[in-house]
Picture 1 (cartoon, rainbow, N blue to C red):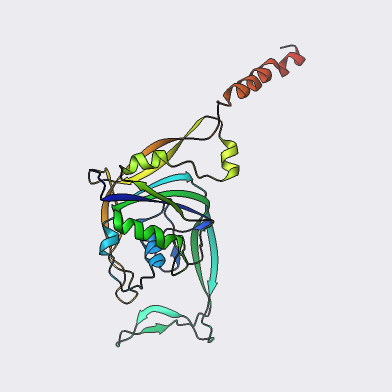
Picture 2: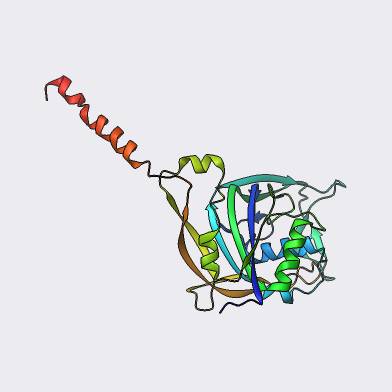
Length: 266
């Protein structure tokens, strides 16, 4: 159901590096191939200046749709870490007081691996009460805290907000927003339209995403709830007036005229 009391906020999520959480922890931090609801709500909370203990009840109720305009590639970043005081690193064991013990024999350097999406571009659409959506759009344009795409080390490139849209199904919104891929990706397009992967929040969805946060409080930790999502493909104009296939077909024809075996008399 749609109506005048709801609206949709459209975001462009682009950066040299992005990293969207996942179930991994400790020394191996992976990223999901698309932005998570937890990560996007964290961006909105930062824009509004909320601290980590502030309730997320109003944000959790927003419905989310994500379109993959440019999937990017996976990057593994290799880290080493140590204690700045020169002390041995903590181990996974704890003493009778519940305190972590130092490694035995002592280890002074550890290794951690972190994964990122590089050169990726996404469009996110958030549907909710009009008053809330309007305030979020204003906050994204004038954020209190710096915005990041999954991790603090991943600031966005260019303006994040693509503005407000009248209330409509998320699928329709994702079909209407112009293609946001980079210029190099757009030059590769050969047809008048491009088919893009999308995921929309849908109570009747065929899959469950475990990425709905209850809090960002570091003391209590975050427990993730589930939401039903539906995967689909949407067709978006590329800006080309005609297909580039005829030229490709001509090139193929020219290649077929060349017969290297004729030189051998076959």
